[in-house]
Amino acid sequence: MDNNLTKEQIDELATYCEDAELKAYEITKVTDKYPEMTYRDAFDVQWEVRRRKEARGHKIVGMKMGLTSWAKMAQMEVEHPCYGYLADYFSVPEGGEIKIDELIHPKVEAEIAFVTKTALKGPGIHIGDVLRATDFIIPAVEVIDSRYKDFKFDLKSVIADNSSSCRFITGGRMARLEDVDLKNLGVVMEINGEIVATGAGAAVLGHPAASVAMLANMLGERGEEIPAGTFIMTGGITAAVTVNKGDSINIRYQGLGSITAKFV
Amino acid sequence: MNKELIQSCGDELYQAMIERRVIRPLTERYANITIEDAYQISLRMLERRLAAGERIIGKKIGVTSKAVQNMLNVHQPDFGYLTDKMAFSQGEEMPISQMLMQPRAEGEIAFILKKDLLGPGITTADVLAATDCVMPCFEVVDSRIDNWQIKIEDTVADNASCGLFVLGDRAVSPTQVDLATCGMVVEKNGSIISTGAGAAALGSPVNCVVWLANTLGHFGIPLKAGEVILSGSLVPLEPVQAGDFMSVSIGGIGNASVRFV
Image 1 (cartoon, rainbow over the protein chains, first blue to last red):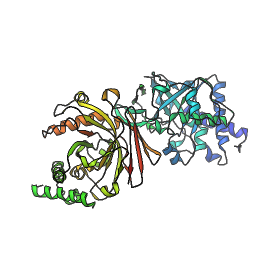
Image 2 (image 1 turned 135 degrees about the horizontal axis):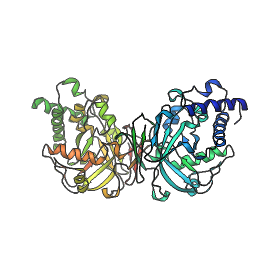
Image 3 (image 1 turned 135 degrees about the vertical axis):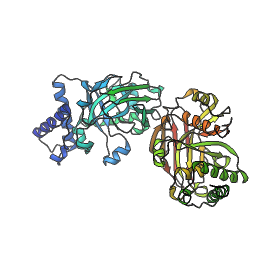
Image 4 (image 1 turned 30 degrees about the vertical axis):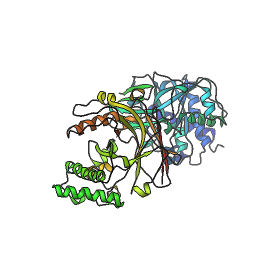
């Protein structure tokens, strides 16, 4: 994977994408401006924004996978999911409030998150490696908010936009892998008391651990690894559901309790 | 509808099923048909099946998902009767090409009762106390109505579009599983095609059985000990044809698989 963009162009797109995130406004796709850009360029934009956040004193607290359902990949005509990072200020406490005015057009997804106890470095990481390296799993809700107008994007554009990351919430109840059946683990999403989506773990690449393996292998392409102790959100089990100001969400996880939050 | 017309509609649906020949929607031909008429028609169809030697072994609940309710523009489920001829075992071939016309498979949770339930006034606690076990299940629905062009009265008259069903490999006490959050994964020919959870059917499959017990209670009909109750699909219906293989797994309950021939 080579670059087609110069360092100046990467820096320009980093500013373009991060300003939209921080000031909550819509932008047009980065590929509209630079149709020749490569996946390498797109990831370089994401990593440049990440570097800038860390330089300003933010901590990176985890990673996320996106576009992990076969249906969504087919719809987007892509063969691969994508990843993004989670910055400290994305974190919202369980039962907390999410300020919708800081976001553009947020949607929520129910996910399973992994926490690792040993490092995972691709290429060649498979599910078995992931299971061995997992400390515990914990339910999570991701709030995604593509900075692109009407959530319309291509894979390179979404990668440059940190895979639409914006907020996340973790549940209080963790579990050891041997005590849960992640493929069949069910989730029920309610907004304002109405059931809006249901699903099971297999919706994420057949098994959420496959998503962690893919993350390790994608990071491996850049010479990066998943360090021990990393929190990883594996991708939406349910469809992403639009939320509005005033909405309360309650997501139940089979055997793992529930997560609530309010959009204010 | 008068008694003669109800009888002739019931006979027409029975013949359509036996001869594997679809008919035009009843609602297209009889604009004034009510849901009450439709249930009377379904009872006539059932009467013919029983006269042919079939035996009632349970009941099914349909139209339990919001998506299907919106499609049919109704805000309640419906029900039909299960007979011994509809039941298949795990691993057995299901001869849809000989028995059905336009089959669609759906993953469900089946309840096996150990006590009678007679509504009205049945609560979720009553249903759980009367449930011996729950099992994974594939229901293969079919419509005798051309191209599934059904309104609610058409499907009710047609025994809630009941076809065939297969129960899976495990029976689990309802005390061992959270029926609202248990996840479901459906695979067809090796690909995962849908996932869902118990709450997709009226908030919980238990709510569906409560609805059925109370609805039948108005007619003095109990759910009986030993009966199989199919509680409604948790995932979208999937068209199937001979040669397809499908499996469903339910978190904390088990698996069911079926090979269509």
